[in-house]
Amino acid sequence: MSDSAVDPEEVRHVASLARVDLDAEEVERFTEQFADILDSFERLDEVPETEAEPDLTNVMRPDEEREPLSQDEALENAPESEAGYFKGPKVS
Amino acid sequence: MSYNVYISEESVDGDSDGPLAGRTVAVKDNISTEGVRTTCGSAMLEDYVPPYDATVVERLKDAGATVSGKTNMDEFGMGTTNETSAFGPVENPVAEGRVPGGSSGGSAAAVAAGEADLALGSDTGGSVRCPAAFCGVVGIKPTYGLVSRYGLVAYANSLEQIGPFAPTVEEAAELLEVIAGPDEHDATTRDAREEGTDYDFAAAADGDVEGLEIGVPTELLDGADEGVVETFWDAIAELEAQGASYHEVDLPSLEHAVEAYYVIAMSEASSNLARFDGVRYGQSGGYEGNWNESFAKAREEGFGEEVKRRVLLGTYALSAGYHDKYYKKAQDARAWVKQDFDEALDDADVLASPTMPIPPMKLGESLDDPMKMYLADCNTTPVNLANLPAISVPAGETDEGPVGLQLIGPAFGEKTIIRAGSALA
Image (tube, rainbow over all chains, first blue to last red; front, side):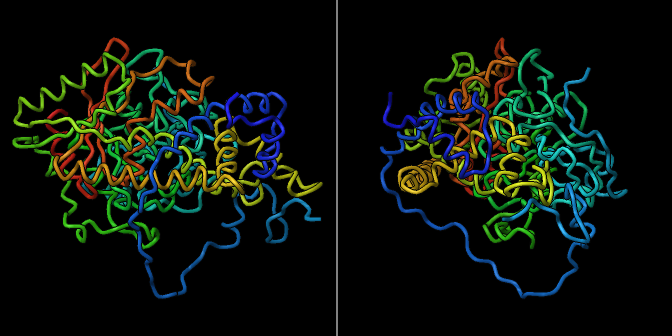
């Protein structure tokens, strides 16, 4: 067992943080594969601290009004909508 | 013969005249097309129809091109073989029974099979260059910021660019000319004219390599397949015969590029793919019960295994207690790779390597061992980390299929890699 091995409980915990349900087989497979993958990530320990030069700069423009998507267009791909709103699961 | 190249074979006409009039361009299915289904190769977006065009699609239409259809791809761009697509794998048109490479496998295969004159893909860690190499066509990954990403469904924003496929370097350069240039909808785009160059890419495909100095990073040959290495040196010899010269160079940072790439790409993916909750679009998880449970159900049903794997690992790498260990170290590695490349390009016009260290894999043999699949990206991912341009040109073949030669240039050095590549294809 390597240092970076994760147990099934940790895989389930991360899956719940990521809002992804997994079946029992996936949990088993991921537990095994993550050990391998995280092991390779461990090799980043050998990388020296390096100063990055920023490549990107902020781009500014005047805040002008433009034609947005219509309400109908915005709702077109929703699995379900009601009275001009997206319909989602209950929040309670 | 059908290679399962298209997910939606719906054609869209462009303007009647323009530089691409009369030519067909296949478009990867993660690039938004107004009114034409855009699935990203995922069951999650099986019925998603974008209400607007990506900037590159607008530019294709303005240039007179006909969009021939939306091409098959690894789900959300996550794969090296095109086998993670929810719509089934693509078969390599020039290497029977083998993968076309990924993630833009459908686009490369469309050009290789003659089903489209040209194609667009996206390259986050090699997703244009890998399938170009495996299918024996030309593919270009532009400098970060040369081409607008507006309308490209995001996988890892800080790494990806849209790029062209074509049978020849000159035709790929023509397509790049059409799609390149600043865009007010993508604040990361830059004007090449302010970076000391211009957009006359096609004219640069003159095949003149007299006096060209090529650097060969030894790390990118280590561990590569013997037949691939042999074909690579043949291509270098061919360039030498035309007036180029080469020297070898050691770039130790490259040995950490794959890990750094996967930590960064997975971390960005875990955040980007959070939007797929089945409310505004995508597969619904239902309307009853707890909303977190409903989202988790939608995502269990809508995402394939590779996408789940990357979203989970990205979530893990960014979670409390692990951020400094993984994500911060990966950013150090990214800066180090960039430094190494910049220094090497002070003494060379281009850097050369095999695009892929292996020939195309057989269909059905890669998905059981994800780490092995990730390692196949060792030569392409460093380029994305460094934001540089690179081209893959056909270098020859082994018994197992085509081999690509990768040429890497300095930032906004597209004309240099196009000129060098055009000496071979």
